Picture (cartoon, one colour):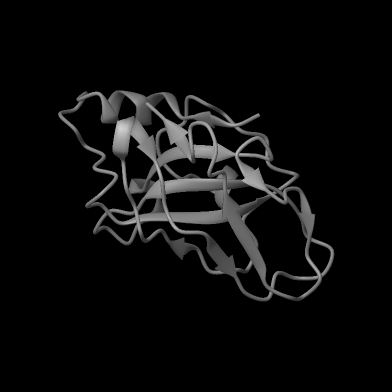
Length: 141
């Protein structure tokens, strides 16, 4: 099931005052394995999430727009996803200037409802994430 994290909703709505800016903040995405058990109340990237993100490099979201409250970004490609890794979701987060992942705010966890081609099993090749271009795009506020 896809969802926006509770604290991200608060941040978009101004508590604390607009602490997530979809267009101007560094927003990244990472693949998440099927073994992850999500917690909608988490605010920051924590070890329980990071332990399920594998060895691939998180991808910067570019081409971001927010027309009509719909979050949109260009598709992203993760290279060399290890053989056998079952990926069933994508975590989106705001990366702060702090190198500590514990300060990176979680925004959304997306599944096959919003990501075309999930779940996918790694084969050692690249995996391209095609964001939903239909109703609500990546997500809608």
